[in-house]
Image: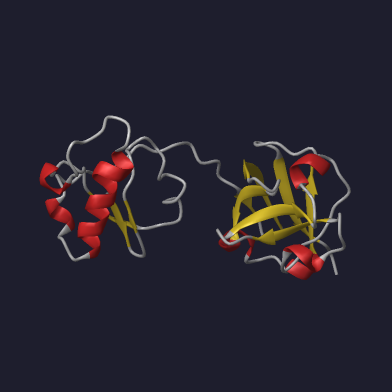
Length: 182
């Protein structure tokens, strides 16, 4: 169980929360060991139902976090590729491709604060650059664009299509956002 300034997370300690916590300030971490909170019997394969959901329900009702189990200093962290940010550019990479074919990068809104979205050019896989858009349909059908998605990360999308397929994108591909000169 991880408590941040804004959220609480309950998950296995296998690195699953490392991306969710990448931009969070952790307040406390507790190992969930208080078996009086679990559903019985506890399945070996369904901890979401038998352990995590009951603990989350109790915490939502004001149960003290310190009583779910002992305090921990850290959790398992997966590698999170760090973007390279400069005053007129940012270089990141594709970290996830969603079921619609949108390519989500590791570049987030704070990484792009020095750039003017109206003057940004996005470069992926040696392709002619394209621009930023406020929403998916802000460009013509079949055209690529980049936008800040609901998770706060820069996404590469194609209006009405799959960016992954039409641009032949894959996880790990570099993405460069460059400020066009006035």
